[in-house]
Structures are given as C-alpha cells and as structure tokens.
Length: 411
Ligand SMILES: NC(=O)c1ccc[n+]([C@@H]2O[C@H](COP(=O)([O-])OP(=O)(O)OC[C@H]3O[C@@H](n4cnc5c(N)ncnc54)[C@H](OP(=O)(O)O)[C@@H]3O)[C@@H](O)[C@H]2O)c1
Image 1 (cartoon, rainbow, N blue to C red):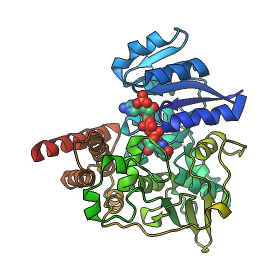
Image 2: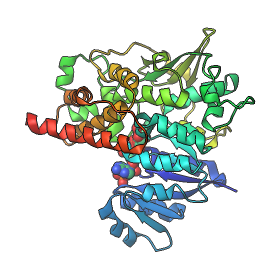
Image 3: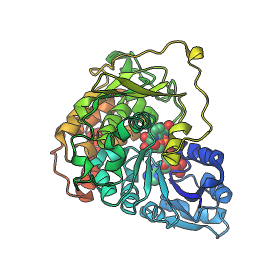
Image 4: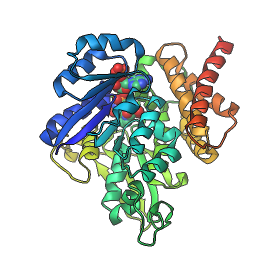
C-alpha cells in the first residue's frame, strides 16, 4: 500500500517542495489531503493533479471560490477546524505540517492524538506547546520527524549514533524492558555534549544596531542562501528563526537548553552538528535545499535517491563559522530566558513575534521594532503554568493584543 500523506499548507514554500519530492518518490506515496489559507487557485490546481480525498481551506471567504474551481468529487473542508478534520483521514499515515505560525497548533495536536507520523516543518506549535505536543505524541504512538534542515541534520546524526540515543524510542512512546519510559531515562541523552545549530546569519550578518535601524523590507526579504515564505525569511533576518529553533531542538531532542548552541555559518552547507561526550563531532552536510530534509522525513528510516543537488565541496572551497552577536540580535538570548521561564513564556515569545512580523511586512513598523515589541510583551507577561491548550491560546491572544495596544499608544 502506498504511504498516505496529508500536506497542511501545500501552497506554501515547504508544501510545494513536498509535492515535488512526492512526485520524485513515485507510487509508494499518495497525497490524501491538501490545504491552503487563501490561495485557492493553486490549491485547486494541486487537487486536480493529485486527487486527494479532501482539501481544506482555512480562510472563510475562500470556500465558495474553491468550490467553483473543483468538480465536486473532492471533499472540501473549511473554517478553523478544517485542518484538524483533514489530519484524521483514515488513509493518512503521515501528516506534513507546513502551515505558518501558531495556526498549526490544533491540527498538529490532532495528528499526534490520531497516532500519525508527524513530519514537522511548522515549528511554531512545537515552540509554544513543546511539552504538550511531545507528550501527546508519546501517549498516542505518534512519531515526530523534524523537517527543519537543522533538526533533520541533528536527527540524522543521532540516528546514526548509538541507536538514535533513545530519540526514536522516546518519540514512538516505547518503553524500556524495565518498564520505565526512555524519556525520563538519563541514559538516553547523556552521550550528547552539545547540539550546534547552524544558521546563515541572514541578510544582516555582521550588521550593528545602527545599520539595523535603516534596514528595509526589501533587504530583510533577501535571504542570502534560502528561498522561503515571507514570515520565516524575516525571522531569519532578526535571528528569531534560530531562537525558535533552539526551543524546537530542546523539545525534539530533550536536551537541556544550555547544551544547545548556535553557530553562524554563511554558506549553509553544514546543516548542524552534534558533539558527543567523547569529543567527537558529527555533522550532516548538503546543498541548501529543503527537498532533502522533507524527503528524509517521508522515507525515514530508509534513504532513497531523490531530487537534491549533489554537494561538491571542492567547488565551494571554504566553509566559515562564527559566533552570533547576541547584543545586536536579541532574539537569541531571549530564547534561553524563555525556556528557563517555562509555562506560557514561549507562547508569548512566538505570538508577539508573529504579530510584530505581520506589522513589519505590512510596512507599519521598522525592522528593529520587531524585537522591541517581542521584548516588551515578555517583560509585561506574567508567566503561567500550562495544563492544556487553553492557557496557551490565551497567552497567544494576549501577546497579539499587547502588540496592537503598544503600537496604538506609540502612534
Ligand atoms: N520555507 C522553508 O524553507 C522552511 C524551512 C524550515 C521550516 N519552515 C517552516 O515551515 C512553515 C511553513 O513555511 P513556508 O516558508 O512554507 O511558509 P509559506 O510559504 O508562507 O506557506 C505557508 C502555508 O500556510 C498557509 N497558511 C497561511 N496562513 C495560514 C493560516 N492562518 N491557517 C492555515 N494555513 C495558513 C498558506 O496558505 P496560502 O498559500 O493560501 O496563504 C501556505 O500554504 C513555517 O512554520 C516555517 O517556519 C520553512
């Protein structure tokens, strides 16, 4: 039987690449569900080509238009709950989460609860609800597979070392022979000394605070090595993307955040590294191309030929590494504070950033204001413990409103 795949956010950068990967993988993979927010023309084209059971459109005003573009044979789900319905398709083995932002949280949780293989590109839900999402996955036998290139790199390194250091076992909810969960077994991560997440440094690598004051939207959207959607591209320019990735790694690999570091690597060839307790450092390398991590998440634990361009180190010549500048790029030190604060802090960190980036993309705030707004929200927030989704959604809504209120006051 082919593996059934649902792609949440199939019209985006990751979603379109995932469809190219599935084309290349051939008949072993079948698309059973697709989703978009507003881009109904592309969603309809994809639905005609891949013939999924259902498509979901989350923007309420777009449903009628989509219906007119399809022939009535594809089920159309709509509204905010449509993604959670889509992931429960009985023929879906794998759910690739490629929507942008916190909007992906309920469907990621639903997919974990349904015991699906969860290929995670949409990092924001893991950042805001890491404990809840990983626990739900464990309890329901759902495997979490990273798609972010850095986390895929770490995952590939761990998978090749000491049986994944218990990673696999933790994320499919298996038990050790003595009945204890490997998640709480100190042996499982004790051979990892440090995880080194690499990042290109974005378009403002090396810039000081004064240069960032002048940064334009066009410059911020010109990423030196990756072609991605607008929100993550701005996150790469503020280094918020790396900050989110530190938190993402903390949950995916269950390593204390103090052992996760960021290394700026402008060529984006070494996708991340793991230093083990014996001093050995293993890395995963490849061209900057999301097709490889998407493919690995789909075919794991198999490796098969795919679309990725071959790496020719002799053509690249030199690889460079440097420390990030935490005083100019405040997102990074804030990420560590947020993890230490726990509870609702990460939800506020993420939501304030989403709201501030939307304001920047709309031309209503300057580049440095993005992190000022995030810091303002964190300073004003009273961290609460999380017992479920309710506190997370409240914290998310509070931060978005706080960004709006702050801007109203300053205008
Ligand atoms: N792009 C990359 O190379 C890359 C790498 C690593 C991780 N990621 C992560 O992957 C996720 C997707 O990134 P991307 O670059 O592919 O983003 P993108 O190009 O902006 O695509 C976002 C997708 O989500 C849909 N969407 C937008 N708002 C939505 C909402 N409120 N509810 C439901 N769906 C919504 C969009 O639909 P419409 O097209 O209809 O608007 C589109 O299908 C992000 O979390 C990002 O951090 C991306």
